[in-house]
Length: 242
Ligand SMILES: [Zn+2]
Image (spheres, rainbow, N blue to C red):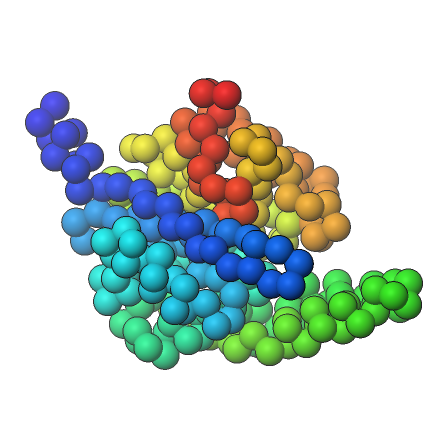
């Protein structure tokens, strides 16, 4: 019992709230941090240019990038790894991680699947949407590639917070991974589930590269019956309390 209490004190999940706005509104994203005695792992890191916002969000939670030992990228969408390049430049000690599948996309060795999708649909769009679509393509093309130091696989158990399982959750993107922190019975969903009005949902279907797989992956995470789902979009959802 004493042992359990001791572990719990030094193993925690901190959910960062990063606020930002553009001409159309205000938004938040929720990167998670797994902290234990030896590791401080950030899961996903925001858009390109977000380093100062992340540093502020860390500071508000008594954290610092100097203490971060690793960053896990759940998938290669620009809102999840856009800032990785600037983070790695300023904090080169941080170990970068992603699924084996996603590594070549983050490293710029393969063309982003989101960009491929954007290019594919461009000609089918109504004229009034083309300007925004072109802007989106430019944003994707501007993301700087980063080397991945460690590839993760479905079923891997990492020592973080007393045991964190990597769960392959393809659909939104084929190489998408989520994390299950067993001791806390908590899931870090990435975009396999999003929180909308306090409920868990499959992410926007238009951004699912394979909607059937996305639905299966969402079910897989829900079947874990976790106490807490930390959604990058939507924040912490506690389904049992709804
Ligand atoms: Zn996202």
